[in-house]
Image (cartoon, rainbow, N blue to C red):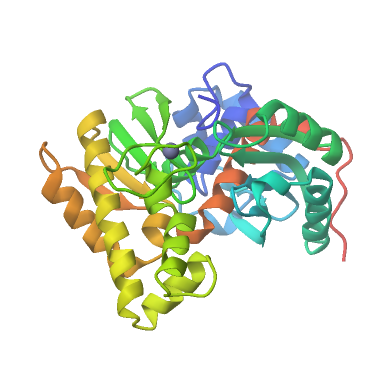
Length: 379
Ligand SMILES: [Zn+2]
């Protein structure tokens, strides 16, 4: 699965780069052991990637104990190149820049409803963001959106942005992208099994990542936008009680306006009111947290994963109520106890997910994307 790791058919450069990405600072001997490539192939790929500015030597990290004559360890070079991440959401577009390790260096949120999205404007935002990163060069773009529910099509938007930005571009469904970002963050020491990632904000969905000893598969992406919660809020689709019309950020903010808690339908205002101690705001967010717990329990019982990860601002925006969500989930599930965790990315998840997708083309064919004569970062 390209979103998670290059396959066995990938080029040596790609496999070496991916190995260093997951290993941190590693010696050549370790890369040979982990990739199964020959020592000569690894040595060649490492020196090419160092010359290209994608890896760098870390002689100060020679603590790696390898029998014989250990080589100088290498790590991902985070200085020269990077990627652009674009998250096109229902209410906002997030434009981000990450280095080759996937660390987000800069991220701007532009509040524009999806229906009014202007791609030329997105191009300007990218240029503006890049102007704050002198000496750094983007190699690819990742564009992430709730494509199934969005008012535009994936291929049309991708083609237009590729043309506009003149860079290699990868696109992915946003829930799948968030699952990939979460997975890559946690894979050190992970055990085989199925992890379900449940996302909720102004859309909702679930993705499963299945790990065996020798492969990782991302599968069964299901939209939960219109999942019936049993509540009574009317949905744009004509039914009542759909997930997004009940617990989506915008739905909750609209409820708060109707109840006289806040003046505008903005979730930030509801969160601030709750944090300031407003009992009505707290009640509203507490109720949402319990409904989310019920939905999470349904998901858990339907797919029976080994681990469940809760992602998105509907879960993370009001940490005070998270324990209500988890308590509701644990009390309702028909099955035994499982490992439940909450994303540690919080509100940065959109930036991290889109940059993770952007790194796909870079790690797949690193040497093809680097300019032949790299623009050397100069003061
Ligand atoms: Zn609906």
